[in-house]
Image 1: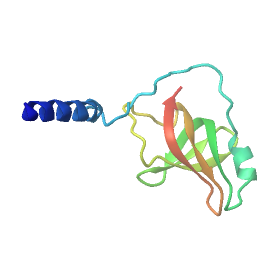
Image 2: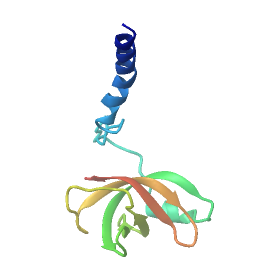
Image 3: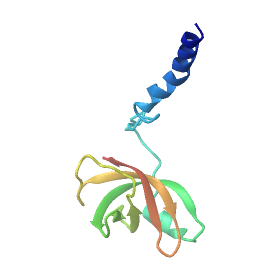
Length: 123
């Protein structure tokens, strides 16, 4: 009887962990896909504040105009250019310099201002 009780307790204790283990405890897809208006920044606005201590979350629209390293690109919004890093971003659709994208990331000023991309959306 004790063994059965211990088995039931163990099963109830570990059952939630097994459910979350299936997908790592989180979803890879966003819960909401919103295609309406979004407040975006311009690259010129970001570059105006290039102190080494400036950091802010940003959303920008434009194009990846050229690749400079494996995960570093030059991004242009049509008026100015900035370096972006696509370190942990996975795209399933190929893009080129004519593909309009929306970038969600963190702007970091300094000698080489850069945006660390958290998510990229093809427009």
